[in-house]
Length: 127
Image (cartoon, rainbow, N blue to C red; front, side, top):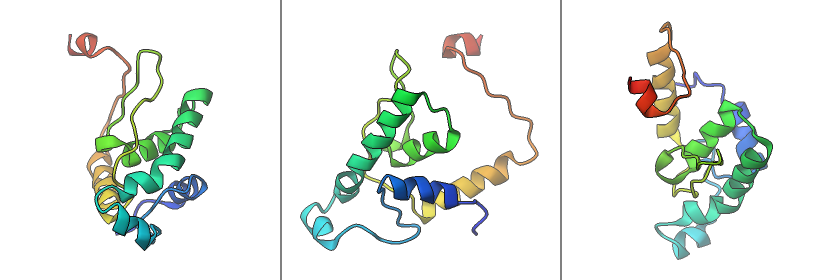
């Protein structure tokens, strides 16, 4: 199943101290016991916010960084405010086998397709 070169993703996650159940369960048992439903949020909050500040202050357009923010963000969304700042809070998730499977399925789906990306207001795009 390992089609994705995950090492850059893991490197950034490790530097920001983000959990990665795909590799290993790193969340302390005590945290899981105390915060039964929100332990991913609590564990990843500091690293996620550090990465979000980095993106917002240095205008980093690296798609890998945006993907990591998407994976660890609330409801796996990307959202920017009117100033162009990424502004989602951390979610209660991490990079796991399901996320890897979905990423691989996406790569399979787009392979060989001619895809164009655009940056427009949705009303202009739909015109």
